[in-house]
Length: 389
Image (cartoon, rainbow, N blue to C red; front, side):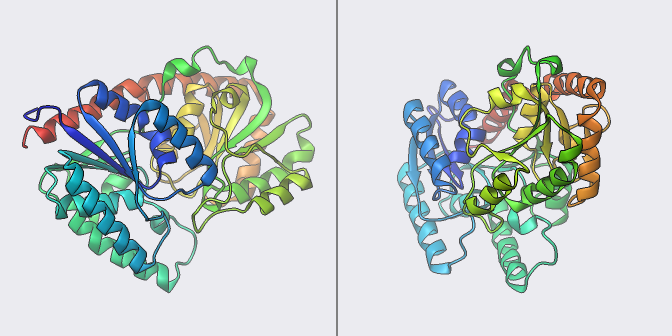
């Protein structure tokens, strides 16, 4: 690199996502001599954000918060947020901005161009709510998506940029939309898993527990999961079905705590709320189920594979690349409750199949999803970009 003590600024929707998906990268960058800062929007979940703030303080990561939210569309608020970001970026003068999460990508990319930041990384970890199939889109949603597309073309047009994608579908969509090209794209499947944290976990040590680990959003397939469990629960005595994730999230797809409470009171599922350390749950769960509508490369499924869990997920962007269908897990169509119920019955009633799926999942995690490979590939991208500064 031609820059001594290079400065990297991470721009992400909220601190909780940074801690769960990018903190290990920031610490590695700092270990390699970078000065690291984080610029984020407002909390998506107050519970998750409070926990993340404590982690950042303990890690010594400088954190600046600006007034944008993941789902905010008020033009005055958004312009204020952009102005604040521009001011902070001019003040910090980073050599490289690394953006992730939909608003982080858009606003970080815009600010990097406006402030002439020398290098830019756009890490696409899913295409966001606007690109998630939630049925027939409203007129306002289509209008916002059109505006987003226009601004994104400017953001992605940075002269010294790399675009990290986590799956081949997003790669193809970005190129087809004219936002980037094959030369600028790098495929890195997910944010990586610390494989040693899940070593020694086997199916024969697990409980009769099906785990859905996600923020409590409708587009994570939570309602479909509850409906599927409702139809099979009486035929699966002894099995427990657990939701683990924060509710009341600042997202149009958010499920309220009241609704979750009604499902729990009905006796269909249990709900653990936000869990800081998911490793013990993965160690106990025989099956992990994520019937999401769309993902980038869901870290929950990578962790499930590392923990030797059998997996049920949807045949959609991101999810299908996190398993080996028929070898480490089962794929079902999006929003298809009968198919999801059938998959639950199949795996709950077939211990040898769960054993095979769990063992193959662990092999897959070791082969493709280790965090060290992700860190090395990302740091190589930093070095490529800063050679031109």
